[in-house]
Length: 444
Image (tube, rainbow, N blue to C red; front, side, top):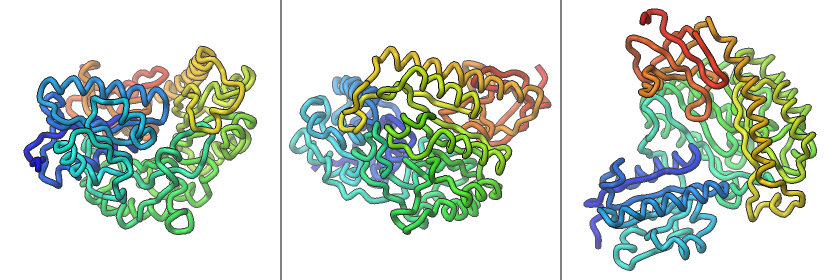
């Protein structure tokens, strides 16, 4: 039997922050067995690629990454492991086609990593997709900067949007027990910002407790001494109710920020997407949030070029952006994914048309964002320091209206700052995405 404790493990995590948490838990399984972990890929004897398969571009990136990693087999690399969404959804195809990889594990098979590796050292290539017991674990090797971390509160999805593969990959929505999530949060140590994630955080608890329990979870998390603040990502519009709005407003530890993936603004397209809600309801929700929580920041995502989308509907979405005045937005070209209901629709648009519409939407939002951000010039903002930007030769941080990695930043000068600490920054300039400033005591 191969002694895996004498091997160095490396891991590359692709895709979203939910995948990152899975990778962190996989690393904890490896370390808890006494195995060594390295962030130097070239020195790893066992290299894991945790993949995304949500879109064709993600699958392409995953395969290219595996092929790039296989080149290390001419050096120290002995085993190449492919885990996550790609083998989960396309097990037969990738096992048969990716000869460069030795071990394949799905999204619920991380507990089998060492057993699969031992089998591979004995017998060669192995496919362990579907062999694991899944289940929840609160142990993690955190890979984010020390002052913030993600907390994945559920997996899977029940929403059945016609363009989305997630239910086919991750299965139905499964909430994790509150008491175990609290243990996981405690084990993270002192956290300036705890970011709650799931495919839909607002649906938390319905499957497990028979009713929505997000507010109860928020109250439990925000009394923890080691958690300074909580941010919410991926809140579905139809699930945001008065109780949640009131909790965000009244709980000082909840960051006044919501990520609400609207995906479109026009009723006909929303219906084709199987999205609940309408243009009027979305605008009413945004108005309600701002009336109840005056300093609320709202982020969203939109899909351009859905099958049969007209130029008029794209222009209407532009007008929606001008009216909604959202703080941050992401725009994506519709991706025709096999095994989704939208794949079978007629009226798919050429790629060039979809990309043109994405650029058009971005241009509109840039104007909205530029106007919003310019309003902060001359003002003082409370900013958490994320570290140093060596290219810009200054510190970099975020105000409450920006989540890590997906939103804009605040670049600022100061004599000395500590990562994870808050500073009052005087804003001196802005563009359509970022802010620039300095601490009051800074003199050039």
